[in-house]
Length: 150
Image (cartoon, rainbow, N blue to C red; front, side, top):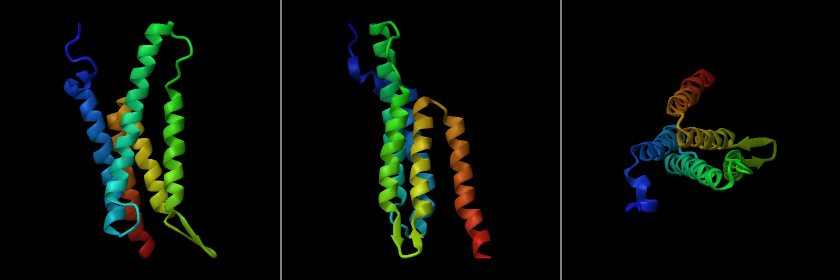
């Protein structure tokens, strides 16, 4: 009998790192939005990254558990990726405002979508890939903004 049962994740350092990484890397993307006073900033991006990481971790664990029970039949953790992508896209679309010919907050929406993808990557254990994507996003959001202004 496992004395920790479902609380085993609390002592699983890897899962804790994945959750924190999803939140922190999402926050790195959201920080630029926060500093520019856009509607979805640091906290929103952190929550998107954290939620995506959690959904991914749970989906992978459920797939493993069901795989053991069903013998590998009908288990598809990729559906979690589809669900997270759709959910984040819905939230991001809510941040985008169209007024006449102008579209505002499109970059914020794209940042939230990317924070979701980074969270998915961290939840799946692709921390290096998530860090690289976050670094590229920060460069795109800061350096290219500087170029646009010139």
